[in-house]
Length: 171
Image (cartoon, rainbow, N blue to C red; front, side):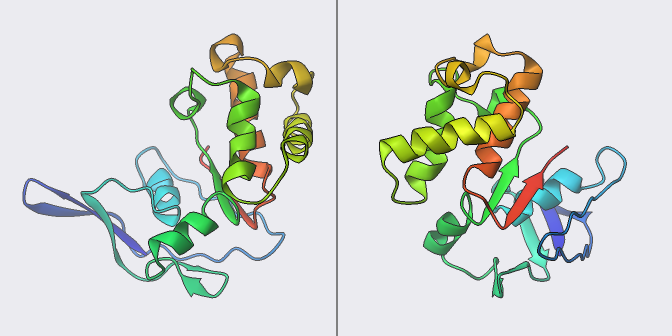
């Protein structure tokens, strides 16, 4: 896969022909210096690149389908349920106006048919699995009431609640 940024009439390859495979149950780490394209690769996999940034070469295969050629509806089904991402800065990902429980549980509301009680139970379990000490209390809190480490754990809970086949962690 190659990712190109188009700016001021110029094209800059920021990820040049990266190739890797992640098998079921496998953990793969991409390491490199700051600015080498790790986050850009993760964003490309999730189709979250800005308009002036494009995947220009190669394919991105997931469950036998090329993510570059599927429809927007198929992409929405995959993102958040089969493939999720934990972003490196929780305060830019968490909505300050909504309680933690609503934000973690939203993943299940958008990607499945679950009752309120199932969503609440799964949210508590995900928060526990992410290492938050009092998930029932945490669910009722707002992001600003949590420490940076606790907010990062909330992001992990959001990433694992739907039990995705692929979990991308950006740092």
